[in-house]
Image: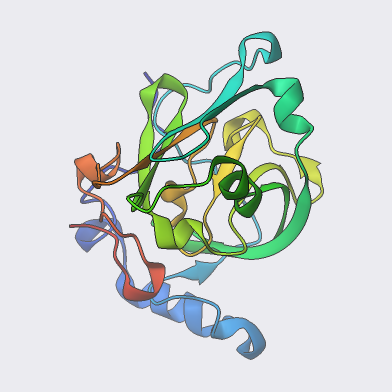
Length: 216
């Protein structure tokens, strides 16, 4: 299985020259520098970073499911999901591998609409994103409530590529970008937190880029 993501321990020490990162950040233009979290530098590209193979998309066998601590669980096929209301938004993204991409344009289903459909119960405190190949990522409910959280299928005016998560990617701009699970297939609302794949492999449970919550 190919690996396209740096494993824990490679982001600090020998893996990164902190002075170079700081110098790159200082070269960020003044008007946007305040949008760049500590230890990050701005890139115009969009690196491909993930663990494992890129799954093949078959619309006939694809579905999206929401379950757990919700009043109205749903399961939608691809056609029904794409018929949901769509919005466009702009958000900055910040990767734990230290690059940030500012002002990305996203298009997809607003998380607020999904919440309106399923009606999380008062006991819901966390959301577990379920993706292809059993991958999971955990996000606190308060982060999911942000207005800019989307279930996205387009980025910067184009369909998201397979490598970046086609046909559906969770976008949670307030957290390091591994929380924005690629190849999303469902959301589980839970009472208790449940660390996901990267969280179980040494990455921080909360992943706030402004606090540099990279590792445990």
